[in-house]
Length: 108
Image 1 (cartoon, rainbow, N blue to C red):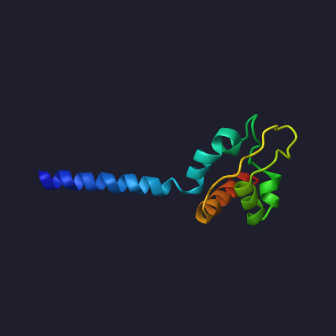
Image 2 (cartoon, rainbow, N blue to C red):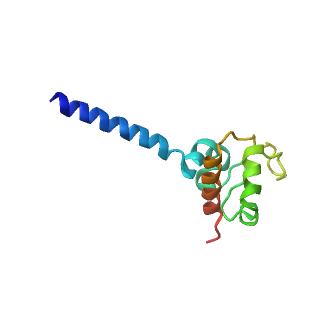
Image 3 (cartoon, rainbow, N blue to C red):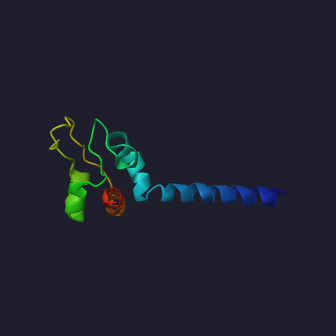
């Protein structure tokens, strides 16, 4: 019985660790860093523009998108009064987030 309980605890711990790693993917990062302002599925809100069929995302290089993520934006879209704050993400996180945003921006 003790071995089964130990095995179960180990399995639960591994699942918890895996869930944390999986949250580092682009969708997970979007949910924790971007969703509040940019909305569900990147549809935008009153606070920030959406990413669906975004001209900026579709016409920019990965580096240009990365620069906005890491350095923020000064509210260049006139209907949004707030600026986007810089995000503290590592290189792998930014790459995953850029890929996710490009997926949201694809023209159907």
